[in-house]
Amino acid sequence: MFSLKDRVAVVTGASQGIGRETALALAEGGAKVAAAARNEEKLASLVGEIAGKGGEALAVKMDVADAGQVKAGFKQILEKFGRLDILVNNAAITRDGLAMRMKLDDWDAVIRTNLTGAHLCIQQALPVMMKARSGRIINISSVVAEMGNAGQANYVAAKAGLIGLTKAVAMEIASRNITVNAVAPGFVETPMTDVLPDKVKEDLKTRIPLGRMGSPRDIAAAIVFLASDEAAYITGHVLDVNGGMYLA
Image (tube, rainbow, N blue to C red; front, side, top):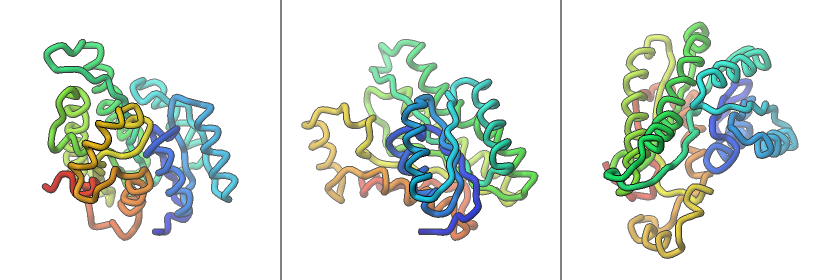
């Protein structure tokens, strides 16, 4: 595992799935982790697991769709750790439906959490990183942002927007030695995909050359790499971790 000793990492959507596994992997690499999400009970369990393995973590109750909560959450993190080196924008929701019938509330909710939430977190992180002239920002997009997916116009638009946001911010702050990259997972075994019928899951596997859905650990490993010193010359990049499902 790449060394992240003494780095401070913020992971949004850390209560389950990819976010939870990412928080654990960053802690294993030596980072101090601020785990942010809406579910305090699950956050407490995660922080306890990290502490049990000798790591240091902080639970931060935060809804990234709420600008006030984001600002308060980052203030809490900086008061605790005094620095911020890594930001993983992972928080996401779904409100699926055909575009023709999609309710505006469902469109707005997904865009607000999945795209605007990342923007709000970046705004809080950048002043700290720019002062330190160092930082890693990693946005979690999706394979569907690149290939589309029927019934998910809001989710696809938000995740595609994250790719654009990644490239724009990467160009803005490269001179400050801050990298901004995206990871685009394929279909991963998480609570978000657990609700899919077994037949749908089996059909999905036939579309994946490696023959299986991804694990949260597969995605976390890519995130840890982009957060490390070894990825210092990579910015504005979209790292596909999808088992070959989409080959750009």
